Structure formats: C-alpha cells, structure tokens
Image (cartoon, rainbow, N blue to C red; front, side, top):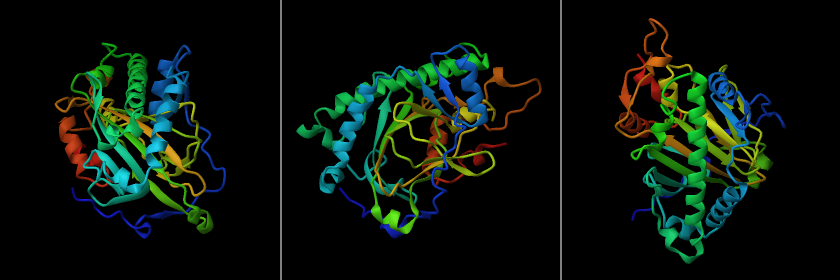
Length: 329
C-alpha cells in the first residue's frame, strides 16, 4: 500500500471570515408533518436549492450513536486511521480531497453504498474490536436517512404534480442506485483564531447526484452561495437535516431547480463532524429533463447523459469546476 503524504497547511487556501454572527436567516425550513409540505419543498428547491427539514422522523439516538462512533474513530492515533486509507476513492482521507489537487483542513471516511440490500464499503478498522459498534450504528443511520430521502423525493414529485409518484424516488431506491456516504471531521485549530482567518475545510462545489442529506454537530462552518454569488453562513442545527439539490436534479427539472454551490470553512475553536449521504441513480440511468415538466415548445437545456458518464466526468474535475457546463446545449 502506498501512503501519500498529507498536504502541508500552507497548501490549504485561507479565507477571510465574515462578520461575527453573519448567519443567513432565510434558509427555507420545511416541516414534513404539515400540509402543503410538498409545495414548500418545491419552492425551496427553486429559490435556494438548499433547505432544512424538521419533523423528519429520524430518531436522534440513531444519529447520536453514529456521531459518537465517528468521533471515536477520528480521535484514534493517525497510524490506526491511515490503515484504512488512502481514499481511492473509498476509505480514509486526510486533507487531500480526490485525485485532482483539491485540499482542505479535513479528514474523512468515504463509503460506497449499495441500495438493495443495503451495504457499504468494508474498511480494515471495522474489523477491530474497538469499532464493533460502528457497523451497526452506520447501518441503522443509513436506513433511516434513506427513508427520509425517499419521503422528500416523493413529496417533491407530488409538489411538481408529476406521475407516477415514485418517478424521482425510484432513482435512489433501485437495486443499482449509486450512493455515497461521507463522514467529515474538521479539527479545531487554535492558530486560526490568532490569525483571524479561516482555512478552507472543503472547497466550493456542487453535488453531482440527485440530492444529498446532510447533518452536522452544532458547529459553524457550512456556507452556501446565493444566486447573486455572495456567500452566506448556514446556522448549525444538530436536530435537523439539510437537503442539497444536486446536479442531476437540476437537469431532471431542466434548470427549474438549481444545484447550490457550497463549502465548509474550518472553525478555529471547535471541531465539526458532518455526515452526508449522497443519493445517486443507477450508473446506466439516462438523465434528461422530465417531459412532464417541459412547457409547450420548451427545449432541453442539457444533452442527455447517463449517471455513469456524468460521474466519470465529475471525478476528472476539480471541486470548483462547473461540471454541468460540458453537458449544456
């Protein structure tokens, strides 16, 4: 096994912090237990491409068990963690994000997820007695969040008034559906406080898949880019989940929904742990605007592609690249 040296801190871009307390107060919040939540989801996808869901029916003890196991792993000695790396693409990674030169102040575990039956990439640390609770906690979390994503996509289809009702949901629940799960740890770094700067934790990007479901501990750092190009900070909320519109959902709606650019800045005083489940379609699935969403005479803004083709192109790109650009007409 070849272990690549981790990038030095001086290779990670510094970012000027925003004014203290400059949180964006207009993040859409959708209560999934309320009537008209379907319409609210559609509006959130159109207006921002990013929103928070509450009353999501994912038990908090399920979330807390996996977070505790993740924290325990990231507190392990470096040599123990690196036995499950380097990430290629799955496994343990430290500061190096992907193969194309992107770096950030982050360490992570990246798992490939098989939809039916639910399974995930095996890693060497999972065989250690100290990680005996990690696998069960991960499986329990993945099942609960998969149900949440399925419910959200069914409600979005309802809000769009498209049939059948599982037209979006089936893309992420098929036997061949291509999922990813990422556990990110952004360590505290007191040097940042003294410099009054932030290091890039995870550089700006859009998610290639259909949707992503994100949850983090009660630590700041996540930012999204608004339509005017400005960056705003997302208030942390460890009781809720955030949904991110991906590139494929943008194409399926012919640009009606927008995949939102987002990034994470490292917080000097407190570590951040986030869990992101990326829901992709089967590799052979053709991605093109849904005919039911096309107005009379409306033309597709995108060339048809398979998820496998788009995924391959995405893996060849840098994080900040406009991946959809080469597929626009």
